[in-house]
Length: 89
Image (cartoon, rainbow, N blue to C red; front, side, top):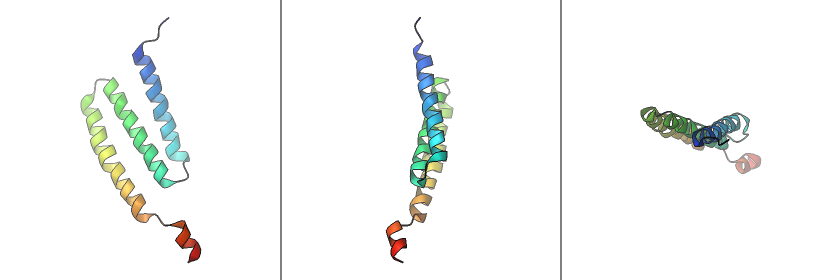
C-alpha cells in the first residue's frame, strides 16, 4: 500500500510546525526562540500552499515573517545585554 506524497509532505511539515512551536516556548535564548517562530510561521505558509491558498501563503510570509518577525528581531537585538559587561559592572 503506497502512501500519497501529499500525505507524507503534510505529515513532515506538520511535524516541523509542532516542533518549532514547541521550540518557541521551550528555548532559553530569546534569539533562538524568535528563529523558531520564523520556522513555525514559514511552515504554516507551506501548509497554505498545500491547500492551494497561495494568496494567504504570500500574506503569511509578507506580514508575519517579513514584518512581525523582523520587528521582534530588532527588539531582541536592541534590548540584548552582554553578559560579560554585566559581570564586571
